[in-house]
Image (tube, rainbow, N blue to C red; front, side, top):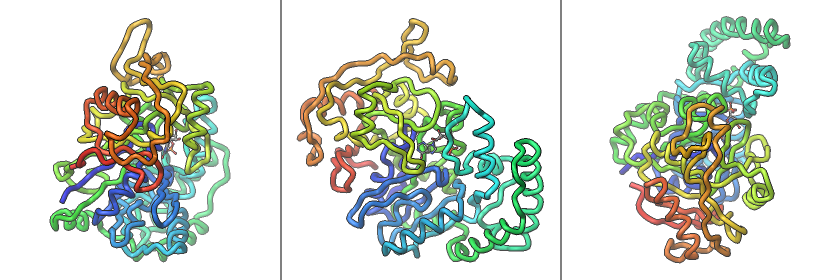
Length: 427
Ligand code: IMP
């Protein structure tokens, strides 16, 4: 049985939650490998509608072991809130495991996220304000506190004393903010530790044993490739890698153990927060897509910027992830559109380019070269076979497949699990 990585291929919000939920229904284990509560995964299944930020979507499938991997940054207050909501709705949490190596988001991370954003002024990234950047910066700076540290109160306190002194100096002296109280944080986090203790453990062995036993394991990505700290629109991105390669590192397994990498692409593009977006539609069409697609952030409620499908970015995303197939989501949102376009190249300083530039200033100057495609009349939400799609919708999908040069395995035509077209096996 395979290990399948599910990866956001654009700027996040591609509809990974639905695809993971669908695949998790038959998986034995789901491992979330990056990000934190900046992610928002909306899942609609027979149990109802769920908005998850930290707990892997597999929790909704009874019997599935759900691992929060070492590559995550976890804010315990949010995790416990999410766990309470889930158990209040009758979801069994006994399969949840938290890597003892996962980094913990502390109150000063959230404080600093806000202070740093404010200090950036007009250059603000538009972060989710959840402390993600400061937490991953601390991980790299070896100042992080990890889930396992919470389990030994003396060691935790000693570490907190050291780190908080440094953080408070920055908060007060650099930003002129108020110092945070050691005792308050210590007490609060001991409370969290007490509740989370049964779930925190070494997880790489669990994952290895599942694979060795021939179980199906899903690696659940968060955010999207174009927010990656290396390959995204740096610095307008997030602080942990959403890429397939990070799936191995963030779950604690060797890359050769991954058998399939599914790239999740929305049938159009959206992004939330600041940064370049070459195919952005700052007009009536953009508003139409946003309204039809209800493109408002799951985590922050912010209106998402919307635009045409960008195949320059998509090819780049495919290159750095090595997708074995594509899941194309939200095709139904394009039902009955007055016209449809796909970006096939960029125009930069009067010349055509086909590569996704590294620099945001260059990207800002790129104008999309758009190819017009015939629109279809809907609704397509009831379609379950690719051949039964209207000819124009088939052509749209074929063209995307051709431009990315990777087969489409799944087409999503609605939020519900069954509103899905399976085109081919993903492994
Ligand atoms: P951060 O991850 O909160 O530091 O935010 C950095 C950038 O990534 C901002 O532009 C956010 O809007 C964006 N971002 C973070 N998480 C997500 C997500 O799950 N979906 C879409 N955008 C995200």
